[in-house]
Image 1 (cartoon, rainbow, N blue to C red):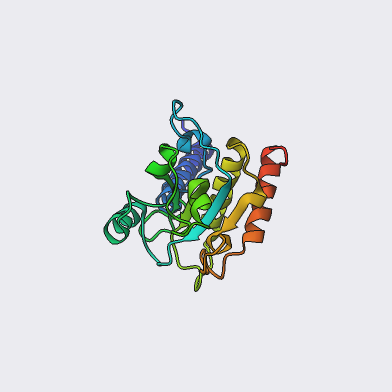
Image 2: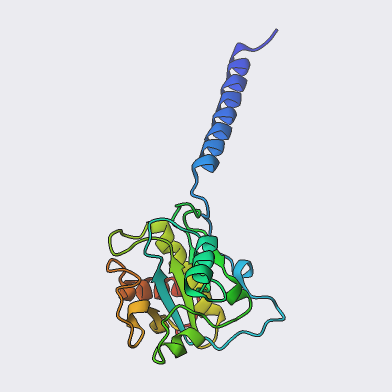
Length: 210
């Protein structure tokens, strides 16, 4: 003879398991693309590529509400006559590049100088020795999405952790490059706040202060 209490318990457990599975599927479907802590192995240059002696991290915004790495690359070739995208990294804002996704460009993979600081002689050192990070968005008018900011902080912390000579104090905005008249990376981006957040992230990772 079956136990009605046991059958009811088994049914409840089965229903609970099904509910958990449904919730997990829904979370995966709606979780922000690009989410997840960045690992150095995901962005590290090839092992046989010597690390360039980088001196700065230069933060930019794209100045447009939408965009992606391929689009910027095509624009820099077509409109500016460059070899390709001028930045070393691009971070997506979800339009259409997944929100929080970090993409290393060919310049970083080849440890090649940037083309992001400006064309003048005062800006040349920041192209030669500055890692250019472009965050998709117009931060003169918008504020940075928290996930996008989190990825920017993580990326800067990773670079400082693995690239000798970089420190939080060496994080600058494009507007801080000598002789460059621009609001980039946008009036709503506080570089001092970014340096503070990167310093806290490095402390959390147990990276000695430099």
